[in-house]
Length: 121
Ligand SMILES: [Zn+2]
Picture 1: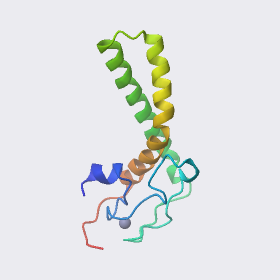
Picture 2 (picture 1 turned 90 degrees about the vertical axis):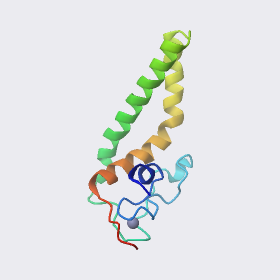
Picture 3 (picture 1 turned 90 degrees about the horizontal axis):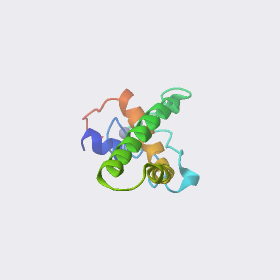
Picture 4 (picture 1 turned 45 degrees about the vertical axis):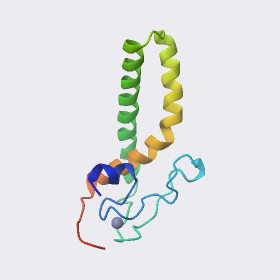
């Protein structure tokens, strides 16, 4: 599995086999931030230090701004929708996308600090 598949499929950065999250569906909001303590395949501890995932908020912010800019420009330049309506559309888009962005941001964050070990587990 390559790096980007591992990030977006929410897999362990060390072995790219074990799941990061207890529930793989981020839209089950009750389990949104619940992660396994350790990888089921390679035993990597997912919380590297207390408050480790606070930095994922910066990744999340970056994703949301990037998504908003892309959607705004696509709708503004290629449709005749008024820019105020585009803003409302983007607000809805952000609300719908937030659970997925939250878990992907955590995945990106841990992938930034733990490198892949190709050893078979
Ligand atoms: Zn693992």
